Image (cartoon, rainbow, N blue to C red; front, side, top):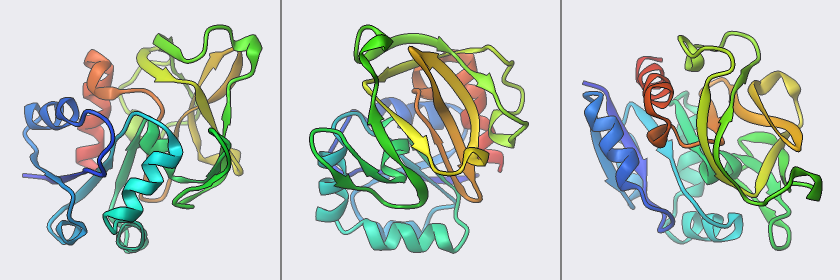
Length: 202
């Protein structure tokens, strides 16, 4: 049974993520303690909220250095929504904040031409390449999004799916053991279930 650690850093409703993983047969631990990184086979960094609050929560609970070390050792990490944004170097959300720096790039606000901000609802995934995280997910499949900022990776090669909301942006990224999805797989029905299944099998 795959052991998955869902990182609790005091932001967002994590219960849906835990239940989605349990339904797939994973052994799941929701934890505020970085010592639990040793126990896990896979790591998930979820979250809904502001970038600055997210990084403050990670720092306050001592996650930053141990999380970087676990990823450097090759442990797979999936960032979800805010969790994906925190993987990057910095964000311009309500100021300028430094992220985990596991991926090069920054987080930007949607331009006014995107329309209603934040984006809330279903939108399409346009696959880029054939990364195993998206195996079996059809090009053009719909996923559920809630966000007002988007990730702008430094290296376009890390982008494995894009979505259009006023602009085309990275909605899924992957580089080595580091992966991120801007949407909520736990709310994206069969598409989200397939992505979580793929993550458990990587």
